[in-house]
Length: 131
Image (cartoon, rainbow, N blue to C red; front, side, top):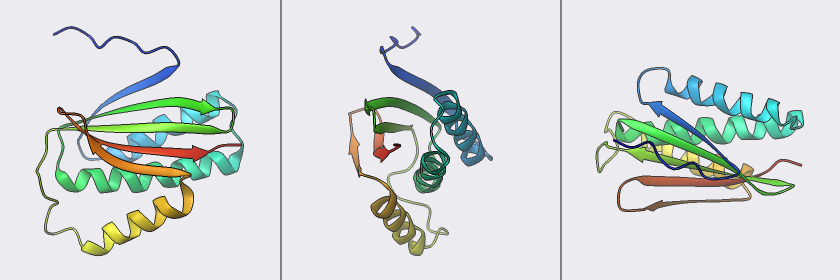
């Protein structure tokens, strides 16, 4: 298998979905934000958004996650979470209130967000203000 072609200006993180994935993604996002000297409020916002998005994505028991982080402009960052494998429906033991909480978090903290499918993976995308 060939390695994916690097995209200029995009930070890529490939993660195997296993217990502790939320903490792993939060640590990766925090290091990315620290490396770019983002203000504390922007780091917190990215942490809340990534926590909500990853918690939601793991409801479908994916095998792997690719997180792509790029600047939209000097005040915004876009994060794509590409989920590979997994079920077509969320696990039944996870309450529906979790979905409501995820939507509320994304609506409150993201400048924009959405879901889509590119033929090989489900993609959650989030644009966050970081200024």
